[in-house]
Image 1 (tube, helix red, strand yellow):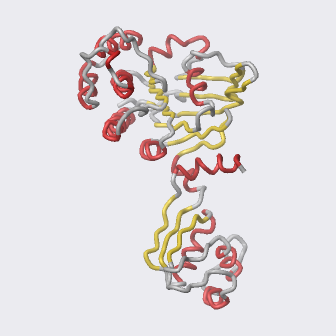
Image 2 (cartoon, rainbow, N blue to C red):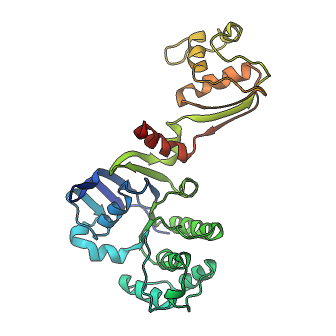
Length: 328
C-alpha cells in the first residue's frame, strides 16, 4: 500500500479556463484531489468535465489558471504524466486491426510498465476475451479493454471519464470492486460519472460543476451533513401538523429548550413550517433542513409518529439542487 505521507496533492487546479472560439468550456474552475482519494467529478454533458480532464492530461492547453497533476504541469510534463497516470476516456476508440491482447500490449507500452497477472485476472472478471479482434467488440467490450489496462496498471493516478458506460450491472460491480482495491492500495482516482449510486458507493469526496465552474466540493459526509435529511413516518390518521393546531404547540411548549436563539413554541413553529401535512393514511415524507432535524423529530415523536426514519440526503439531491435552481 502506498503511503500518503509527503505525497503532493494528486490534482490541484485553480482558476482553470479553457476557451474554444466563443465558448468558455471551462470558466475559472477549481479542483483539489488528495492522495489516495476516490474523487467524484459530477456534471451533465457540456458542464466541462471532459475538457478539464483533457487539460489535466496535457491534451488541451489551458487559457488561464494553474494546474498540477502529481506535482507536474501538463504544459511541460505531459509525457511524464502519461507514464504515471492511467486514463479511460468517455469515448473509447481502439485500433480495429488489433486483438484485445495486442491493444493491452500497446497501452502498456505507453506507460512502460504493466502487471500481467492483474491484467489476466481483470480480463477474466470482466468476461473479456482478449484473443478476439477489436473490430468484433461491442461498445461494452471496448470499454472493458480500457478498464483492464487502466485498473491493472502499476501507476499512482487513475482518471476515469464515464468509466461504466456500456457495462451491464454485473460488470459495473466488478468495476467498483477494482476501484476499491486501487484505493485500498493508496492509488488516487478521479472519476467522472452521471451515475449517482456509483459515486455514492465509491467516492470519498465529490466536486460538482456547472457551466464550467465548481459549485460544490468536499467530502461526501460533509456535503450530506450540510444538506437536508429525508424524514418518513406514519402518524395517527387526522393528525394536524400545521400552525392551526394549538394543542400540538402547547404540548411542545416547555418541553423543547431554546435552539439558535429561538425558544420553545417559537422553535417548534419554525420547524412545523417545513413539514407537509400527512396523507389520508397518516404517511409523511419530507426533506428537512439540517438545522431543523432534531426539532422536527421531537415534534413527530410527540405527535405519535411510528416507523420513523431519518436518513441523509442522497447525492442525487445534492446534485439536482444546483440544476433545478438554475432552471428556475
